[in-house]
Image (cartoon, rainbow, N blue to C red):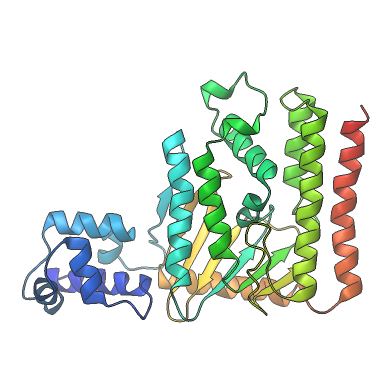
Length: 333
């Protein structure tokens, strides 16, 4: 493949990630710290990108240059966000916020979330739930040495993470979303709470009661959102974009948390790996296939937002009952 053709592929991949209102020339000039005239010369192929410029663009737009040379369905390149320290843990949420802001800039945008676990975006409306999940991930999944002898304490989570979380809520609430839940969506959080209680990592009954109360409030808030057909937030109570939330109930066990963004001719897929780490790709073939799978899942699910009041009530009552059963079990021991 000729170098100019590879350069054109890189430019096309960048354009796929930009809102239609953003000038590609201005964006390229900004990222490379060059004039617009110099950017135009690179776009026209009069000047090739330097190695340093390639690295800058690759880092800014998560582009693998192998994927520019091999554009085959069974050779998909993913951007991998791995968490292994406090700094990268905070950067993880910064990257989620940056992606949400990028997507929110598109005129057409839709979020699809297949929820094996409670959707990540909802945690930060409830500080103690968010703190527990973040502590659990660091202590039990990442096995951080400094936390191995610590009990759960919300103050161990840096405030900067919560501040980023609030910003994530603000952007997420405005993006039209379709979510698929089932009766097991709450299970992993309940299992984590019970595991920590049984092992003495969470034995403060007052704190445990607060978490259970927040869990029930979260579930009831999603129920209200489903009834109304739009997302609301404790953090931003005035944010009410009408008709931006669809909730489906699927009776089959959901295998993975899958997050998919559809911006018309631009698409992006996020798949969880090792519980928390994210695999991200905008590969057109992979995204189209993922989109088709999601549509099939939705076709085989039951819409419980705005319609199906009886089924919606039964679904949320089942989830609330699971919470209350564990609450009674742990707090009466």
